Image (cartoon, rainbow, N blue to C red; front, side):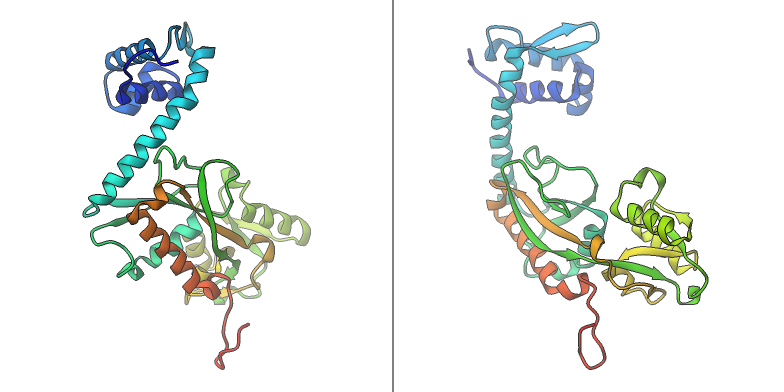
Length: 301
């Protein structure tokens, strides 16, 4: 299918145009001028196929059949290039960073444990925690690793279960017996499992929503102030002296978490070291994460 010499920069431009939908958006994404994108795309089309890869329509660019057939092949080239870049970055570990895409609960826990990385993490490597509910493309290096409470179903990925983060309802000690006022997520987060659980609880057993906040930390602050009851991860609520449990851990909201990496990148030493650290801190704190308390005599409750 390929008719001439292909330049990786041209292939990268082709994929940017496919993903962004226009020359202008691709130029903005790549940080180059629109004419540059146009020239490189034309050069890629000339080298890759005897027929056009895009139909130029008034509303924008649309892939032709030939263009669609080339996308998977070009993405394979992209994946290989990114693996090589990751290996080179690992060899230059000093001053580099490893980006971990995390959900809010896992991100909050890992942030608390960053100081435990001494001896496990390569010297000079910074951990970059990026909180996001969106699925990231590890092949395109939107992140080096991901920690998620949902297991991916597709992709050439290494996936390992690393633990469960339990949650319970928490309130301020002074808020006992003052009714069931719930603190939940913002309306645009109504699809969250916690939001749905609180909505069902209010509908079934009464009570009202007294506050909404889009982050766990804001909900904890509101509960601490006596605004109402919040569903919080046990590692956070149990360690806060301004909060007490209003319920036991809620089984239906316990979230199994998975460590996810691209199969090729996980062999890079610096990535492998960070994976080991994540796995170990989850294992070392398993009981705390699962909301298991101990009595003064050491019994679990």
